[in-house]
Structures are given as C-alpha cells and as structure tokens.
Picture 1 (cartoon, helix red, strand yellow):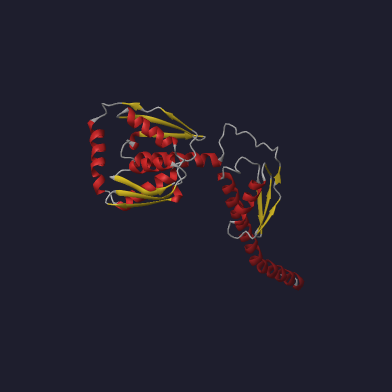
Picture 2 (tube, helix red, strand yellow):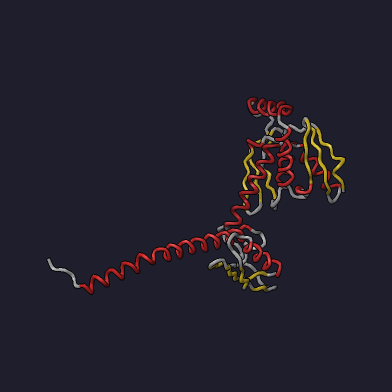
Length: 277
C-alpha cells in the first residue's frame, strides 16, 4: 500500500483543524442573520399595519442591532413614528433614520391588490362588527354576514324587524375604522320559529349571564366603537346592572356609551351618574 506523503498529511490535518474551528463562527453568523431578518420583519410588519405609514415606500435593514430606515413620508411626525417603532423592537439598540420628509410626497395609489395592512385592518373590523352583533340582545348576530373591503362594511342576511336592521347598521357604523356601511339586511318577520325561540331563549337567559362576562363585553364594545373614549370609561357590573364612570367630551358621547352598554346581552340597566362631561 502506498503511503501518502508526510507533507500531504500535514496539510490535510491543518485544513481539517481550520474547518472544524470555524464551525462556531459560521453558526454564530447564521444565528445573527436570522435575528436581523426577524427584527426587519417585525419593524416592516408594524409599518404595514400602521395607518400612518403603510402607504409610504419605507424600507428596513437591520445589522447587529442597528436598524437603517429609508424611504419618503410627508410629515416629520411620521418619520419620528417610524423611528420609535424600530426602537421598540427587542434587540434594536440604534436607528439610522434616513427617511426623507417631503411635504409634496404623495404615496402611490393602491392597486387592485390590497396591502397586508389593509387586509389585516379589514379583518379586524369584520371581527369587531361580528362581535358587537353577537353580543347584542337586540340583533341576531349569528345570522348576519359581515364583509369589509377597504373599511367599507357590507351587512347581508335577515332580521326580524326594521328596528333590528337599523340597530345593526348603527353598531357597524360606529365601529373603529369603518368608513361606510352598506346595510343589505332584509326584514323577514316570518323567520323559522327555531330562530325566534333561540333568540328568545338567549334573551331570557340574560339573568344567568355572569357579571364578569357582561363587564368584559361592555368594555370591548366601547373599545371597538368610534365616537366614544372606550379606554377612558370604567365599567363594573352587579347583578346585571352596569355602572359607567369616567369622563367623556359631551352629551352625545355619554348617550352613545349608555346605548352601547344597554345593548349588550344580560344588561338589565345602566347607571351613568359617574360618567360626566
């Protein structure tokens, strides 16, 4: 058997040592690349979801905790917002904000394909409207179909009365993010008795609904709704009696908050003496 030259063995050994010793460095580099990509994705996704930034041509790169932002916006406040979003991502310690502020900048008009942010916002609106209808003691939310396109909500299905149709339209219309409502609900007073009895049973079961459930749904309904400061209104429930407290801007906001609370299943009455303006 021919033995390989001694020099060749030595060279092979050195090469093997070099390769194996570089494994930790390669693994560390790969791990950092993954971290950079994750941080870039988090920042871009937040931009895409923000109604103030999604239409702008912003780009993000992250290298070793430093985020570089480029693109155009129309106002300084939007440039500052982009920086704060980037700094809010875990692991990002520095931001090189190269975004150009141009008062004449006009974002590109949306095409036929909606952006990621638009899709998410429409889905959120649909969920909020469905929830408000489902929680309502006066609408048959389960038989109402809700579709949202660019903030425009379409309601289809059947209701028992014109009053239910109008209420469903109001609940949808004052939901955050809703631009318009196309109320195509049809009034059908002769719906199957099973539907009627199911609604009546749900209504009659109001006394059995827990106070904690009522409080949670009233709070969520207020938070989902526009024209009321949902986060500034405190809600508590005792034996189905809801108490609202806090500060609103005017009587219209107060009246809307009371109407929204009264509409939730299980609510017997609403106390609003502590809801002032």
